[in-house]
Length: 125
Image (cartoon, rainbow, N blue to C red; front, side):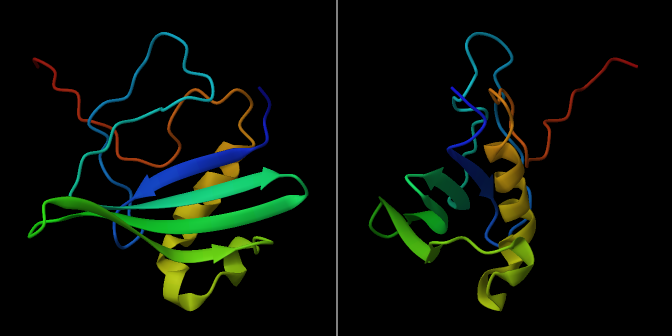
């Protein structure tokens, strides 16, 4: 386990943060899944480092309502990965999610999500 390798950030179709339905707070979390998101359309921003390569991949995930199947489509893939300000304009709406993925990738023994809307906690006040 280290502070380099890969990281994935989940966001909405316009790059916006989405609400996590579940965030685990116990058990072994290092380098694992840190939040559960369930929406019919999500985008995953992945950064990878290893073997002398540094890449970024932006993938659209959605449920095809007519076919009832899960479909993924790569919107952007590059190696070497660019500075966040240099990604092409057509994927520029994912810039903040990309920055969060770079931050998460270097988070030592990461144990938490880095780009999401926290679930509201209701209190009896």
